[in-house]
Length: 129
Image (cartoon, rainbow, N blue to C red; front, side, top):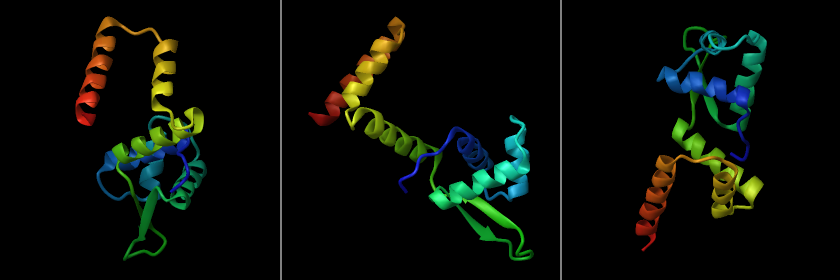
């Protein structure tokens, strides 16, 4: 699986993750359109792309071969981890510390956020010692 998920495709994945079970394309259209105004055809195209990219799988309904039941192949956490890794590889040539330095330098952080980051780094240091 070498592809990333677009923002629109992410909405389809969110519907699948939140469902906790297989969904038909009609159910996915209903769930995705509750927050957006996309055509059913667009949502079905996004679903087909996710299948082609390997993020979603489907099973044919036993009673009606025209109905497919879709499920995510990865958990949300697995997808986030993959997307983060791809992002760092693409934009920072795999340099995580460079990415963090850029994010920290480009954003205003509260004292609490700075403490949280310091604690995360200290915990990571303990893992590698």
